[in-house]
Amino acid sequence: MTNSSYRKDRVGGIVIVAVFVALVMGMLGLWTKIRHDVNTPIEIHLLTSDPKQAADGEVNSENTEGIVISADISKHWQNNPDTPLQTYGAQYDLVVYDNSGYDLVNWSVVLNIPERNITLDSYWNGEWVYDKQSDIIMFTPDDRIETITAGDYGTFGAIMISRELMDITEVTFTGSRYKPITKYWLFWLILILFVVWITSVVAYILYLNREKNHRRIAEKLNNVIDQTMRTFANFIDTKDKGDTKGHSSRVAYYSQKIAEKLGMSEEEIRDIGYIGLMHDCGKLATPGGILGKPGKLSAEEFNVMRFHTTNGGKILDDFTEIKGIKDGALYHHERYDGKGYMEGLKGEEIPLVARIIGVADALDAMSHDRCYRKHLDRETILSELETNKGTQFDPKIAQIVIDMINSGEIFV
Ligand SMILES: [Fe+2]
Image (cartoon, helix red, strand yellow):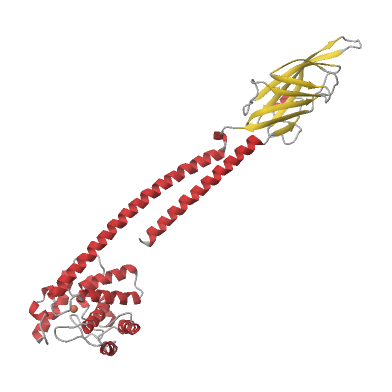
């Protein structure tokens, strides 16, 4: 898995968990709010006797929560005028205005009566109960007004007989607030979050599946490339009977170790492995008699032999996807002092990949049997690398290999 797809996987996971946490918090908040609204009774005291003021919400009480009550005498008359039994009959109209944004439920009203010994003549839209001891009337609405919907109002009233007309100014309203869940803005936020969350989860699952597929295909392709390269390298090694089996693979391995020490990127290290596998592909065009000849080559044979670099360059001419693969074949026999072949390039004129392959190639040649000689021992190899630092080999790369042999990282 690449770092970037790992990062995307993680970010996706974090977003889903974060939205889920926000969703749960939102639901908890909404649940708490609804329970609080329903279970917290409100109690409001009057208020005003002016219905117009009440309807406009203009009242002199505090904390009315948008609920205003007006009490008003709409008509009145005298009974037994100018006698000791003179009383007043009056129609008392009360209105509950609900501007609270909630429906009002389970509500009732208590009215304090300023007069003693009133007579409750008749009433409507609810039950009026007169408590003579306390001079209060308790009102409970009937089913016509027992729920006052948000923005609406409920009216109720009574005809009462009393010695004087009464100004009803002390009214206590108690009730509960209710509103459908869809009226809470938090509900819509939760709904949006839920849609976002579900969409994210589905998208994330699809993304993970696609990534998994991509990774599987990429892995397979990489394996195919790797196996193709190794198969081709086996061709080369089989042709070059003089070299021990696996020469190209070992050169690839040493080159990758050197590339690691040089701090190359993961991709460059992978590529130099392929460059190592292919460095001697030009030998496919070299006559077998020369490649497998025990003993020293004649000058003419050596001249033919040298061309495996040029031929390698030609074979790999179209292989542009792996940067430096052609250079590895063309220049791996150049020497740091300029005395190599075919171009006689010197120092850093020789591409870095070719300098790496050059040292790796020489190391494998020294540490394994060849048709013309047995492998060299560890001390001799170290001394050869040391002696040829800066002449045959790039001194920095030769030193890296010396260090790896000494530390046991490369076993010879
Ligand atoms: Fe070579």
